[in-house]
Amino acid sequence: MAIYKIFPEKSATLYSYYPTLNTGLDEILELSTFLSIDSTNEVSRILLKFPTSDINSVFTNNVKTSSFDCYLKLFTANTSQIPLDYTIYSHPLASDWNMGTGRLANLPITTDGASWAYTNQLNGNVWFNPLSFPNGQTGSYKSGSNIGGGLWYTASSYEATQSFTYTSTTDSDIELRVTNAVSASYTNKISNYGFIIKHSGSIEFTTASKFETKYFSSTTHTIYPPCLEIRWNDSSYTTGSQAVIDSNLYVTSIGNNKNIYQQDSVQRFNVKVRAKYPPRTYQTSSFSFALVNYALPSSSYWSIKDLDTDEIVVDYDTSYTKISCNASGSYFDVYMNGLEPERYYKLLFKSIISNSETVVFDENYYFKVIR
Image (tube, rainbow, N blue to C red; front, side, top):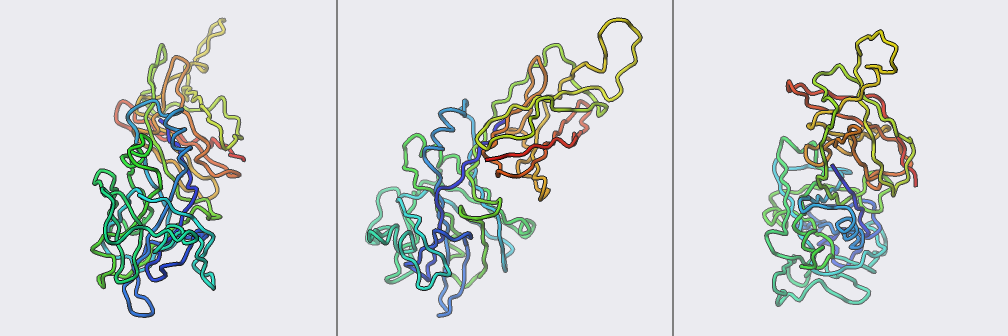
């Protein structure tokens, strides 16, 4: 029932062809394989780091269960010549790095931060000694003197993969399950230096495939920055004396929608459910069937849509967007930090009722998130 988003504190692209180039301020991250002007096979890799304090705060103050998931998400800016099938990998980085102030288009190039060769060129810090790697860590490098490309932990449990096929290439957004790596950094088994995202070894530095995939970075001016999404199920379902709806002959409303919410707030939305056609009664008492509140089924979920783009920003999830219920009615919580400020959003509900019919409640529930 809970989804909490953390945004990166720094990001950069490493280019094998430009071993000292820093791209820390670029609005685009590139994960590509390409043929250079010198006809050499080259690659680019992505670095991302999320604030340790934010991660620790979520697990300390919000996640009250041992069952959770963490997903690393990046959103596509542009793609070109994508192959039918490919796989990307992410690993937790084993070395700290400096974001820098460079851009790919800078002339002369900026060299004050992380690059293919350096974690921080200002201090002369390289990614690794090519003669030996620390225990449990590895890296890779192009050839000859062009040494670098990152240093990461090798444990298979920390590795995350996502495969794309010819049926999925129209949606090249990245969503990598990094639960084990995040959990290991939170419990101090490894240090939190962020993630490296790269192509498989069968694609990098080969002539087999040349293509580009570009994603929005932490400095993007769009509504699509990368994020670390922490999801957990803390739903509770007790109907009390309320009847559970068993058809689509009901309407929903949100009685406590304030319409405007601060970005750092948490809002509990109370869902009121009434009969669409309450039976008529002829009596002198104050009771009215029109005021009877019903409970949504236990298989009910919420979703959020961006009102301007009409895109789903939080999709229905059978584990993490479940609608809860108590004696007062159905409800769910939304962490507003995961929504871009100064934008309008729309709430949607979906219920699977007793006869396996799916009912979507779209009653134009709008709200705005502000700074």
